[in-house]
Length: 359
Image (tube, rainbow, N blue to C red; front, side, top):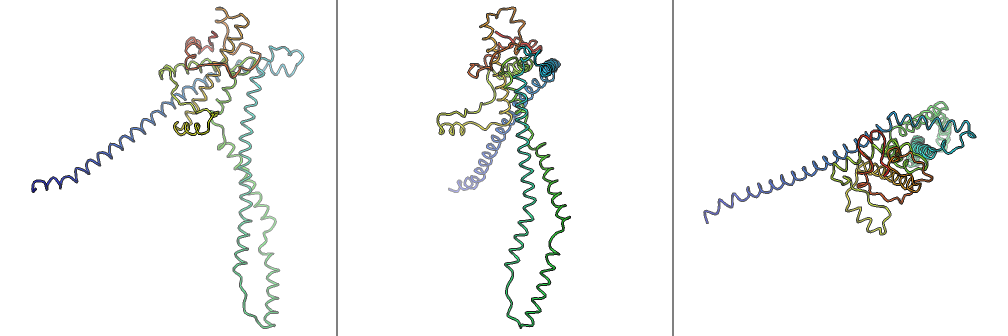
C-alpha cells in the first residue's frame, strides 16, 4: 500500500495535463476552422474581384464606348426626325436603353426616399426635444408646489400684488425672442438638410451588386443588346475559368428558393444551410448574369434555326447580341450554365474580341 501513495499524488497533475492538452487541441481545432473559413472567404473574394475586373474592362472598353455612342446618336436622330427614322433598324436598342433608364430611376428614387425620411426624422427630433423638455419642466414645477399656512389679510393682499407683478414680468423673461426662434429653426433645418445629403451620399449608396443585378437583366431584352454583345463574352469566359479552377462545380452555395411548397421545409432548409456572406450573394448575382447570357445565346440560336440561316459561314460572322429578337427572352429557356459554358465561348481570343459561339 505504501507504494501506491506516490501514484495517487501524481495522478492529479497528470489529469490537469490531460485537460490542458484537450483544451489546447480544441483551441487549435477552432483556430484552424476559423483559418479555413477566412481562407475560403478570401478565395471567394479573389474570385469576385476577377469577375468585377472582367465586367469593368468590358464596360470601359473602346468597343463599348463606340457602340454606346452609335446608339445614342441613332436615338437622338430618331427624336429629332421621327418620320425619317421610323424604320425598325433605328429602334433596335430602344428596349435596352429604356430598361437602363428605368433601373437608374428606381435606384435614385430609393436613395432619395430613404434620405428624405432620415432628414425628416432628424428635423422632428430636433424640434420635439425642446417641447418635451419644457413639458417635463412644467410638470415637475407644478408637482413641487405646496400650500403655506393661512396668513393675515394684509399679508395676503401684499402677497397677491407681488405675485401679480411677478406673473406679468415672468413671461417677458422666459419667452424667447423672435430672433432666437428663427435662429433655432434655421439651425434645425440646416442640420436636417445635412443629414439628408450625407445619408443619401454615403449611407444609402447602392452596393456594386445592385448595379450588376440590374445589368444582368439586360441580355434578356428584345431587339439587340449591347451588353450581351460586349459584356457577356468576357463574363462567360471568366465563368468558364472559375469552373475549371473548382472542378466543374460552382464554389458558392445557392440561396434556397423562396417558392417552397411547405413553410416548415423552408425553415428547415434555411436552418441547415449556412449563412451567405455579401461575397456569396454578389457571386450568385454574377452567376445569374452568366445564365441570362446563356439564355440569350440559346434563344438567338433558336431564332436563326427557324430562319434556316444557321450555316458555318454565318456562325463565324454573327456575334452574341447582334441578332434582332422580336420579344424578350422567355424565362423558361432551359440552361445548365455549369456545363453549357464550356462550349458557349470558342476560346480566350474570341472572348477578348467580343465574339460568342451561336451553336
